[in-house]
Length: 326
Ligand SMILES: [Zn+2]
Image 1 (cartoon, rainbow, N blue to C red):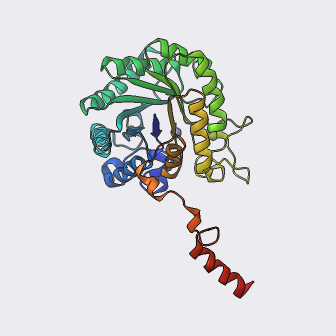
Image 2: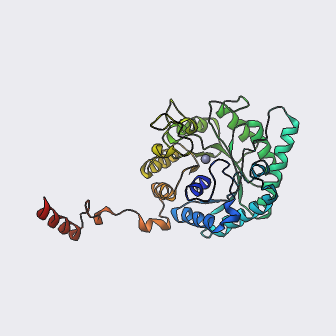
């Protein structure tokens, strides 16, 4: 399954979401911008349309003073996703880390459960096919997400964000995924934080430890063994690249395609790209996986290129130019 993500970064680049809070107000302010991006990802070959409810939870909306718009943002985002899934794509409700969780704190756990219950409840009533829970850093918070998703009878894809070497409640990532899988998560894995080069090794370890489907959804940036997470990448001048200076670490579409096939060949079942992904990455990944999405109509044909082309007309033109000027 191929899953396009990264709505928040892409809509920030396009001028519809503010970097910093990264709250998806765009859903209410400019819904057509969200629909446009959904359509582009569908044309590029995604199998899943993810509702833009990332960070549309109570804790984050408080930050921008829009807590009262919580249900409206969630429902509208879910409806936009459903409307975009015209080609048989699955629609995913989306929840994430709440920023409210604390280990061994019943009050915090109750607050997380309350936030997940309201978001998953709206997603269930809008008819999603499954819930994608992501960028979670505590096993404890992931287990609450799983419990809530299952209480609504929905399939659960739950991804940890491996910024550090362990979860914030001290679990080795493979172990955290194994526990989550045994607890009933339908798909477990990782999203965000790491680029393909540093996420694939974690995926291969996970493949050996878990029998069921696994997910890998890296960010489209080059990360290294020395700097495995994009949060710590630097610009050429030594300043932090995260988040607005990340472009110089951006991967191209060929690298995205190579990741897709490497992940598939490693037994990964749910393959995607997170923050920073664009439709061009997704199309190349879809094609590498053997698909011909609608946007393949305009995939590259360099035989017609003015300088690189082999087409007879193009060659004549180039020859005349060379005779005249070189
Ligand atoms: Zn991300």
